[in-house]
Image (cartoon, rainbow, N blue to C red):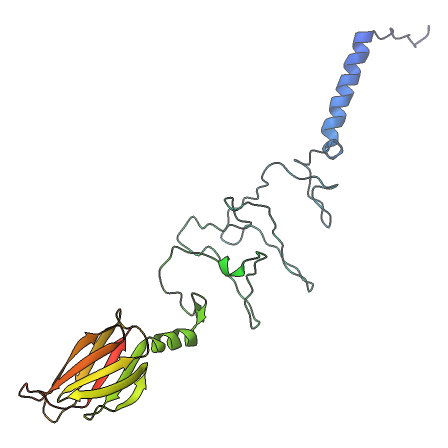
Length: 249
């Protein structure tokens, strides 16, 4: 008696079922071949995903320890990592470090002369800000050499140039001046001082010299760039006195 049996011929419906099942198995077994990328293993030393594809969802690496969640290091002479994005002005930044506790959000260490650079490819460099902050505390160790585009010496020079000053002796002669162009004695205890620019929005101050502590001086504006100074002795009488004049603008 033969042990071999002739199998019944497959019907068209059974053949279709087998073909659909085989196609589904192939799609599950080879996700890379379908071009999706999600769910594939990371391949070291290659682009992930390959062939110009990109992931459509966020890849998360979650840790729970007392150290770092991930570590990227380069034992060669190259850098450690590159992060690039195409975020618009109103979008998220390429890198975000958020500490949900009360510790530091970032920490940079270096051994060279410079800790790093912040550069912009914008055409208008003056309109580009390297960073902004809502913190108003003092940044310990931060040495800011420029404020509003001016370095420290320019700020000092501008402040000095806005302060006009000089000494007028009892005869009306001007000396040790900056920003004052002339002075003259008009009468006993009466002097006219001329500045080199408009001083209508400035604050003048005068101090009379004298042997007695009661020597006084008063100021009267004259026009846009002149002041009249009145000096008195310690009895309140008009008297010629040397005086120092300061005009803060």
